[in-house]
View 1 (spheres, rainbow, N blue to C red):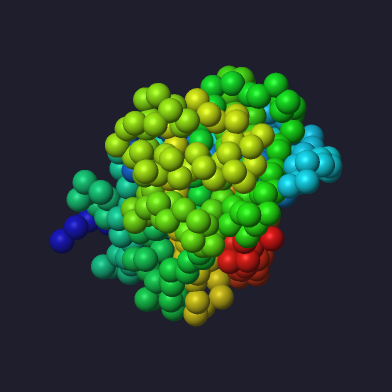
View 2 (view 1 turned 60 degrees about the horizontal axis):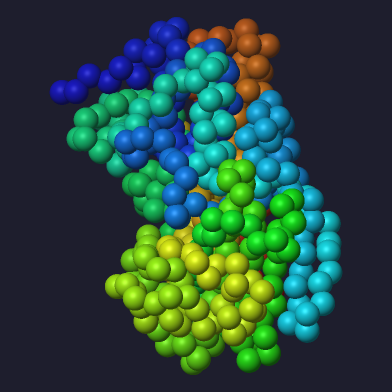
Length: 416
């Protein structure tokens, strides 16, 4: 039979193996905090063959107080702050032409830029390994009852004491242990979707340290909302997010959301306003909405040559056992694997970072308690890890499920 190296770790005094599925912000922050415990041997598995980089699919993320507090807890807030762009206010542009300004502080980022900052911290400390092109496809208890067996995307097997699933909305870790955990994952959706547009230049009226929201003209009320944000990579460009709701289809049937769960990238060689291209019907409908609903917002993207068409908003809810931990505390879920949500309230990444920091802090506390007791065997450490995972799972579920519920309600009610 297969030899289980985890058994040697549990019965000896070697470092405890922990495998983290997913190399995004949640997985990297989790790995960073866990690996600072010298008793743990942490490996991150990331399905992509190379780190994320800026693409036409890159969303902006506004790190608010709770996300910043999580990064501060890990000692990396200033590093992440330096890689992003400070935001101070939100300008709200109303349909009657009036504008009001409200305080909306945060650090503007994208998923790739947050991940790059956390990856540099992790690698500079030399505490954990990141394996690209490697994903955890399934997790199950090892045949000898010691630790966990993880099946990787290349068919190989690794053994681990504990596993953290940070592998997103379609988490393989979550789905492989759901039945045993008493979870019933259900896919929920809302009649809303969106379009992400890029402009090479920020319009002259847009303040570079403000986000800008747009209320549509009366004819499009309840059909759409617009958001313009200066690109956080200091390129001088702008990102536009057009939120679309079901009533828009009565005006523009061509704006039906794409069937693909990953969305679709459209390209128009001559720009959004000029026509031609494989997606011309969609382009023309999109241009009519942009110029008809909010001309000032639409004018900023007249020359945009690509757009990322987002699928209908959806998220996975975990019913059943009210916890993000499973298998007696040997598995924990963090980020979208635990509580995927729509972008309507901008809390997805922030809450993922909160969960990663919370799990890391609870693990450190339990390991410190083991040392204080004098019971420093590897078995005692593994037991402490399970206690920390279960405590995190119960407590973070309370927050995660509620924020997920609120986000879903916003998407179903037109972003209100």
